[in-house]
Length: 323
Ligand code: TYM
Image (cartoon, rainbow, N blue to C red; front, side, top):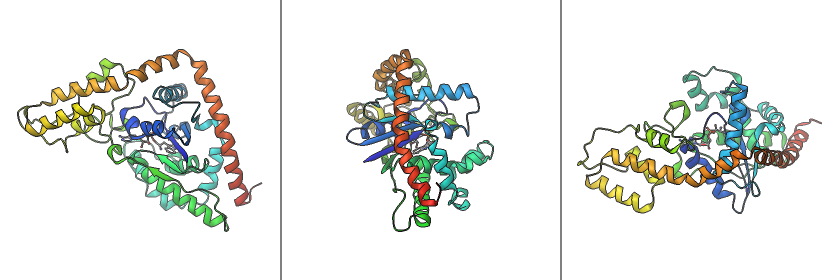
């Protein structure tokens, strides 16, 4: 199967990105034809400092490599190294009804959070549809917050196929791949972990910073002795995703019986996080020490991605009467 997904370089990656998406990227690189990219065109809607954008792009490439993407097995690339993306985006824009974009929650959310109501933000889902359709993707691993964008992608693809496809389909219709258990990873305040809520735990923060951040997890005032419900407690919700099975079972039992305080769970969560990413942290130091290897991966990824993209773009251009 052709797998494809992207991640925005709009700051350091957090554990919501890891559980909701990157862990699935790594699992799906086995036995599939996988394309993963750094969505820098998308990040232009929020990162306005050019030097910072370049740094974030390079950091995300390094992070993905350190977390286990194997450049010999996957095509790892930077979105803007494939400018065909923008051309396809225009072809798709031309058949996308305004109403479909007006109902998108991510646009409404971001404007509410204070981002200016610019056209790039509004048209963001069409660019995302171009990313996906340009590679004939079958399956797109993402978190729940991207589900609506996948629906729009399918709708736009169908519409283009109907308008221009005659009896042949121009675009393949992709399916989202969302794992229920990690569809929405909670942040330090129990809401969805997100940079815009300022409730994130970064994957590659120093261990001391991770331990300290976890202590800020917002909890209620239930005393240590009192039983607590592990099914509704966001702190346990996060702990169980990183803990070893025996630790998870022990903590869950003590929640139900009473006798465990949130302070202890925070310390154990901090340790579990530091341990989970210890090997990736070591690999990261290696990549950071060899920027020329990262540059090679990027160039090779761009060449492979462009070759695939060109064929699909030519198919779409020819279907709508260009060239
Ligand atoms: P982005 O960069 O915000 O997030 C990258 C991936 O991480 C997932 N994610 C989460 N999953 C579970 N719980 C959370 N708290 C959490 N926070 C983030 C996201 O769902 C995503 O899978 N528009 C996309 C980037 C993109 C893209 C694409 C994705 C551009 N083109 C084409 C797939 C296919 C975005 O902003 O993701």
